[in-house]
Length: 500
Image 1 (tube, one colour):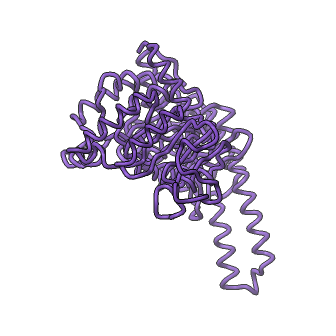
Image 2 (cartoon, one colour):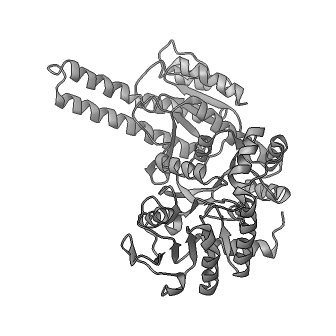
Image 3 (cartoon, helix red, strand yellow):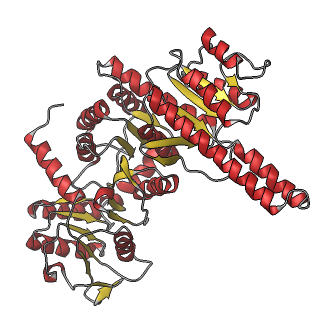
């Protein structure tokens, strides 16, 4: 896809949207049940560094910030305006934006094309007014947006995910906001988030093209209900996939879903099979469930596999059997262990170990053993990736046993002994975390983990110094993510691009 001068203008305008130096909220409120309060709380909690102008003609201040009756009475320039007032008042706000020389607007207000009839006419009038003012608009009928590296958090969900390299486009504000909340919960770093709403001006295609060329975005997540500019979107998605992974959830795959999408944002859904084929040609990783978007974001924290050969290292046999079936179903291969790996493992494992892939550590709870076994297989040219099952979290077996022993026999296992064993257990866990991170970095292969620990953990664990662990709670999630990474690498190779 050749970029036009108009595309470069678009990138400049969207940079202005994502990196404003000043923000106003029209309809700002201290009523905590109103959108004007949601956005103000989000902006303030996110620690936006520039001036924030709450606009409310009936208030002197909103949440401790001086309020103004209109945009025209704000003392400084305003780069970005969020609009939450009722639909009949929005055009008047746009006119004020034009007079104030505002660069961008995000229209939260609904009642436009998503309701059909007169709503579509109102949206046409809104878009015409925005274009006349020389602005760009996200929405109407949107949840808001996030640009973490500008400390710009302005959505109805008040999510505050950590800074990172993942950006997301969502045609559903609620679903997109939920994914961003999951990102915050799971320690997945977000760069930008756009709830596109009705796409009266800026479309999902515009945003895909922008993120494809955004150097601070390392991977793109997208939730789509329908695409109007089919060919241009395909070209934008292809450009993006050539540069970074694109993980996409498409709804409206059935007649019922397509009908629901039309009533939600007015989106028109065509044949899913045609869309699926086009996205496959473009190198996009398609996923079936919302949580798969966050799971897929794990690829941003791992080296990419060079092929589809996997070694599974498991604390017990049952998980190895399940993982073998899953790998086979998702097109991953479990080749036999090479003789040199078997010989090395023979020196550290009991004589009755399986001598095959999956490598069953037969319940040995020893972090030094884990590190040696992992290094043997990850160093082998036979394997492109390693899945561990139960190594992380196995120390909980010790800590739980000690805690229960203290509870049932406090005279034998006193408080001091219990605390000492807990410290040993924590050190055990820290040791295996560091070893997995070291081996991932040293050999440049993904090591993806399923935890045995019943205690809560994050999908992404930041160990510092650029080291991360990816930890799932079920083997099927690991296999799906790894299969997506392998597919993406195969696609890159098939179209003559270097593998990542």
